[in-house]
Length: 374
Image 1 (tube, rainbow, N blue to C red):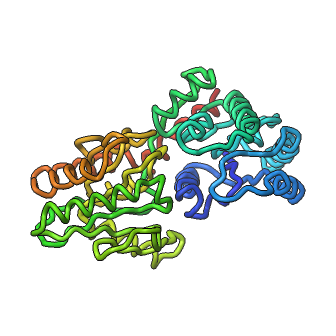
Image 2 (image 1 turned 180 degrees about the horizontal axis):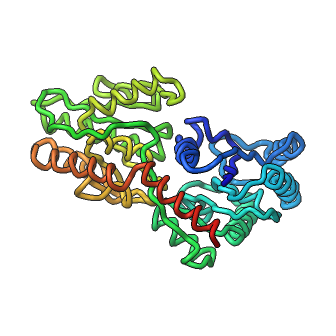
Image 3 (image 1 turned 60 degrees about the horizontal axis):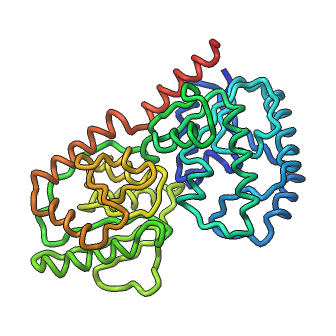
């Protein structure tokens, strides 16, 4: 059976979609003949650049008018037929689906819907409201034309069903895993003077970096017998933030083995993982941290509570929690080795049983094989 992976960006690049596309493709290749389908052409790329002039940064809205999306769909239809695709695995693309007419059945993967992204993730200027409505309409079409809408959380599934009127039996939640090859290992409670808290993220505001900084400052004030250090991966600096207790290590590229090894060492040598994220759909870094038995301190937002089980893998605090609240939870773990080691053990058990890509691959392979029999 041949599976086409529909993706605008190279799914084999481990920096694409936090490495999730890469992990999905590698799993699909265990069971099927897989080919990457890029629906764009030089001509549609030029048109897209024209309609996206003046946009910059981490952009979410598709500003192409419907007629450009139909051109992209026409090319997609030809590719699917030419490559004799049986199943089209769509990695979150809505535009190319507006004119989809090929025979291949479709699975659309989503970790959040457009409505959720607009409501919780991005600030959209009023002059883009028309584009928001167009994007939501495109997403509705993509879901309608899919045989399966595959989500990563119940949080996302509920939006697909309620906000887009998709039949529940068409929606499947399949939990994902860490985007690194890791042999899960538990940690012993820290006993030394230096306590390392690890922060991994490239957006200091959305990831709650100031709260993490305040947490470490409060820990050092409260507990002078120990030295709490915040190791920051993903940032080289942050405006107005400096000090001996904060060490910036910059961005580490998982495509480069030496840099991925450095990231592994940070997970392995740290004592706590802190990411007071304002919004995340999953938070793959939580699964990476849990694979190393690191107790996690984060916030209750998006699909995060489904991946960071409160009291078992760490603590999910409310969004209004400040550095004081995070410091309280950190001290609770550091001062109670039995609780620390229980959470470390439970986190690793969850990774082995639920949150891993081998399990994802088995479940998705069963779904695809079932589709071929219908």
